[in-house]
Length: 190
Length: 170
Image (tube, rainbow over all chains, first blue to last red; front, top):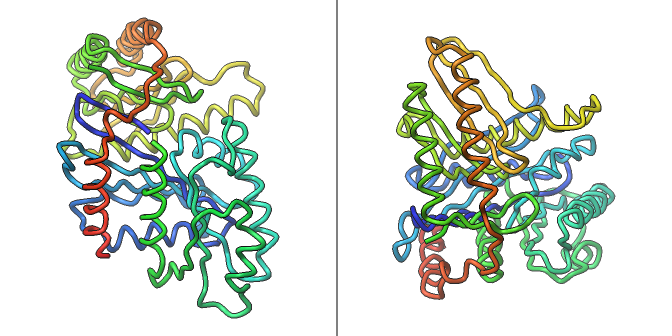
């Protein structure tokens, strides 16, 4: 969080974390496409030629003046591929909340676990932990076949009983609900 | 009045109004001397703290986020080639503009976008001078113990919640 009393601005950083090809960028794409252009910046994407996130995606949201103050939200995605561990560490620095975009497909459970463990390792490096850090789970790809039930996902991934949302980010379902929850968690934590 | 900033170590620093004005003064002075298109002083988390220049044409927030990311990537490159410290600057040469990025201590950076007609040597020299001044100011900072709760009162939270619902069309 960055507070600037001179400009009466407050900036929050929310990071979308999760396994590769889980739908993190799709979340930001949908937000970018739906939000009033006056309330958002351009979507910055650093992608590979194969359209995979190389470094991060970045989107700024703002809501004008609220009670005389100007809140802004910086949304980042991390690259999900295992070998971009250092990038994830950097992008997670200073985050106020995390949206963990889990892939609901049974075949991706290992990837979900590995990335969740990776998140916890990176948080520990900042003297934080999933047990107390504000984060929300998004069970994405609910429209695909061979997915785990929400009950099973809750048992397998939601060890700390954090808020969760079902989503089909490609259709926009659950995207804003997840973001709203993340923002509420940030505001409650300050 | 203060300017709060969480640095990379998770500590919260406070800029006194006087320090903040000096930071702004240093950034504005550098921008003016170089006739730069943009000068940004930011933290390594990608938050712009002070900036000047063509803010209508160039998105400061996006440029700072990418600049901080670029700088962090080169820090890893330094690590990979066994440099003891991170690289001090990065230089990008474009068709009509160049970009010069340099670190200010471990937690802050400067981004300077300038015309092709401005000599790089001058940019380096004047920026080094500005960095020295900024480093002096940063060494005077004190650790802030207060939280941002004064800034984020209940009324603000409630109104922001309503604004979010309106913008997200709930």
